Length: 360
Image (cartoon, rainbow, N blue to C red; front, top):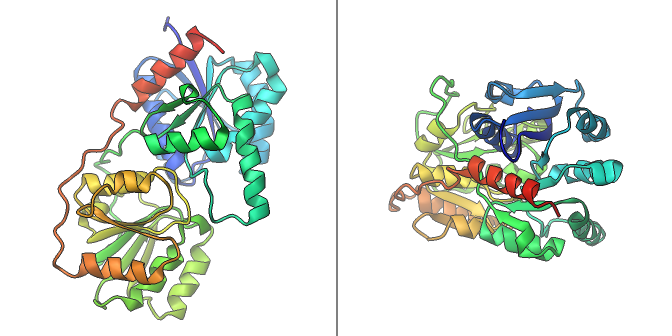
């Protein structure tokens, strides 16, 4: 019998790809290895990440995609399976956590939620931003604990949610590891700029595509690993700019690390982010990065000019200049920076156990 937290329940919308769900599976693997029982409720159990589900994971597949069905199903499933704690893997999922707490009341196990995306959203119009801020302030009513992936994100969570720092832990995501049998996507023969992430509006890959014809070196190509509902729009942009020979969109990659290691530079040009794991992965391999100032954590990661360049999200000229700088042949690739989070699964378990031992 495991002392403390014996059973963890977590949930996700789908395995179609995404850093939140990938980190969730890495944590589940560590929890299972530590002898804990882990149940994952998932709307759609198909998709590229399905192969990363660890052995021993109890999977409850609802057979439907969408947050509404997942949210509706959770209260009955929590009652039936009686977990000790519930892990909410990211901001996108806190609405389901609020509904769960409302439905179960005092019978709801402690809910621990990770901050996966920026809480200060400069991309939102004023009325939406006001509503979002009010929603964040409600989180302290239904979450037992918040986990931020960096100190700066913890400070942001304390301000946005009006939480005391004692209810915010800092635990980095588990680091990425090489998957040795993963297929390598098709890559260009010469130098290339790399983007890694879902093809969705938040990531603003259109900025990177628009910058490509403005680069001094017209032989450099662009590779973006990922998939999503913005693919058609990005392909149309590539065609309109006549960049079909210089842009590759090979889709989801089971293991992007070998591609990151080969890239001349990795670029992340999002409107908003949380603590971008792909930046840490690139720097761990000695690949320089260019990133928009899309969260308070970006400058924590890109902590020195020798590691990369941070630009304002809407500054097209600065993005082109940064790319030209790192592609110009005079910059030295940075020394590898080790990824944090090696003990992430263990740190989460210690947090869960403390909550079970001394519930609020």
